Length: 176
Image (cartoon, rainbow, N blue to C red; front, top):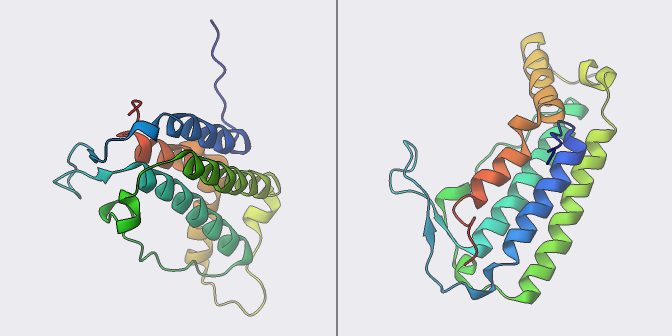
C-alpha cells in the first residue's frame, strides 16, 4: 500500500479536521470520566480532556490561527493570547457527547477548516513579503518576525493546525 504524504496546508487542514471528526464519532459512549494526557513540564499533572473540550480546543486552534494570519497580512498586531487553552476545563466540557453535538461540531469545524484553507490558498509570496500598510508603526525587526511567522503558518504545516489538532485529540484517540 502506498501512502501519500501531503505538505500543502490547504489539504492538510481539512484532512486533519475530518480525522478528528471521525474520531469524535466514537465518543457517544463516553462514560463521563476524563482522559488525562502524559504530564509535561508546563502541566505536571497532565491535561484533562473530555469530548467537548477536545472539540472546543480544535475550534480554538482554527480561530486563533485564522486571526493571526489576518492580522499578519493586514500588518496589524495580533490580539494578545489570554486563553487558558488546555489548562482549563470549563463546566460545559463535562456534558454528555451526543449525536447532535457531533452534528454541530461537524458543521462548525468543517466551515472553519475550509475558511482557513481557502484563506491560505489566497496567500502568495508577494503578500508574505509586502510592507505594512501606510501609517502602521512596524519597525523592520517586527516586520521580519511577522513575515517569518506568517510563512510558518502558511507554508509549514508541521507548525500549524494539523499538529495542534493532533496534540489535543491524542488522549481521546481510542474510541470511548
